[in-house]
Length: 106
Image (cartoon, rainbow, N blue to C red):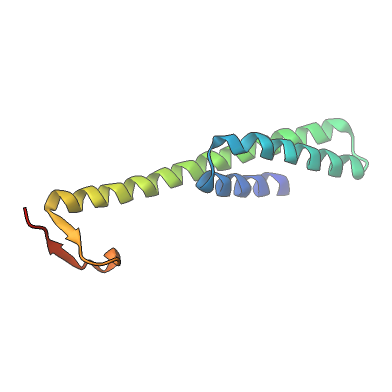
């Protein structure tokens, strides 16, 4: 349970920041850590393999959720920018969050 929850959170963070190529090294690092921990606790190899599979699946699930959240935030920001330009408004300062707009001259 702890491995599944931790790997979903790790995958989510990786999905927000990195591209898909980060998954393979992360799964490899997790494989070595989990197998070492499971065998260090004198558990059988079957349990260690199952834990690695759970880790990999949950990591990829969290990564997918993170990528979808990143895509939605980028898409919504792009839609706001397109709408501003469509209406003919341009930002007057660096701080666009306060809605200080000035009608652009055409």
